Image 1 (cartoon, helix red, strand yellow):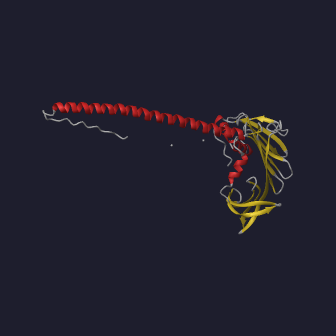
Image 2 (cartoon, rainbow, N blue to C red):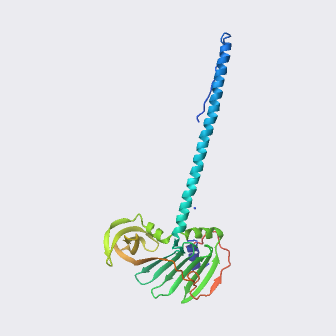
Image 3 (cartoon, rainbow, N blue to C red):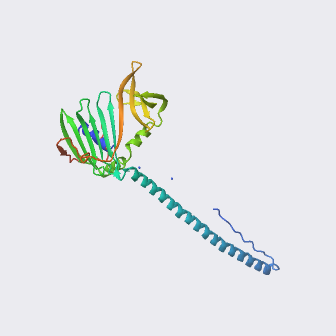
Length: 289
């Protein structure tokens, strides 16, 4: 399997008594025998009544517990139903399926564009170079089970498609129905707030986030957040070079929600001939290393 294929494979494969002891004492005195018998009868009668009352009480308690359990179950069902309805409703706008669209444009003009249908779980990711040539397109369809990959090989677009194992397809289906935009908001929730700045005339909250990059090592990102949306619209990334901050990349981000879906959005293979891959796939994504 080619490196590009492996990378696409990994991307596509982008679930906590009381014990009551009752002791009866019996008298050994003959004089007290009759009284003792009566007393025992009274005691036994009392015990019997207590047992009856206890049984009734237990029944009432059990009934109460049972009702609480029923009510709790009903309540949980209502909560789950509400959560489920909210998820379903969030995937529609005016009754139409919602397509989330994100475009990240790099300083050199190259960009990555992503579309995701929150109802069907279909997704498409395009990588385009600075000269506006498509370098890669990955499409996931058929409930997360079918992958199409179009690659630019020496200026020519070639395509492959294959079916994913059921376990990975099911995971894809779950992941691809999650909101890209909400995930983007949460992505840098723990980033350090360093102030406010005006960017292109727009007031923005400036965040600082440090992590590791496979090529540049430790990198520092400054994100500029639109207060009205909570989304970053500009990101500047630096790494240390000769003890100084060196620019790695500067990008701008665009976010849209589309309800009028282009008919071929998840069927556009950019004119490439598609070859079916029939080799057996593993239950886990192939390593890209």
